[in-house]
Length: 203
Image 1 (tube, rainbow, N blue to C red):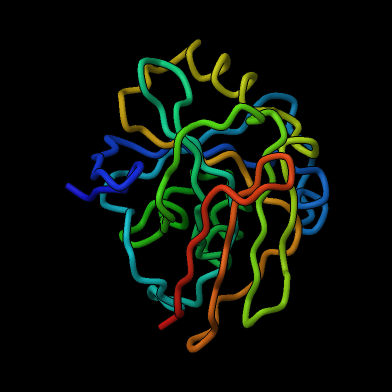
Image 2: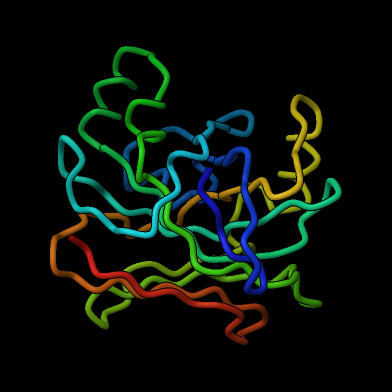
């Protein structure tokens, strides 16, 4: 089973729960409609990787996200994550009204920084992604349709969250194609203070 680091210690997530369409400007940039209820899909443990690939049967797109780790049925740690997507396949599946897992849950579709303990100012989390030193994504809890407390409450109505499970909270506008050789640098801040960061070179 794949692991992530939480304050330097390896933890095995049994699953990754992803919230889709949680930022209005991202919904608009992909031409989607604002959902009437929270959109949720899953990635398996096998989706976790430390290598950023630019291609997996087709070109991949990046989505930077605030990621929350669960312990004792609450969010106990936060990290930066990349949700990698087969956008062309996802568009075909959506057009047919079919599930997205083939485009979202493939092996190697989730990258994470280290996770660090939940900050005192955790209600003011922001995510930033730079590619080759240029900022391409920035957003945070203030722009979310469903903020962390609401996400946790909704998930509890229909599924159990095991210790170590990760919740990816959606992506702000600015998504795009992963290109081989590009350097991705992402960070999570709380109240403007950097909590954690990660850097990957796309292959």
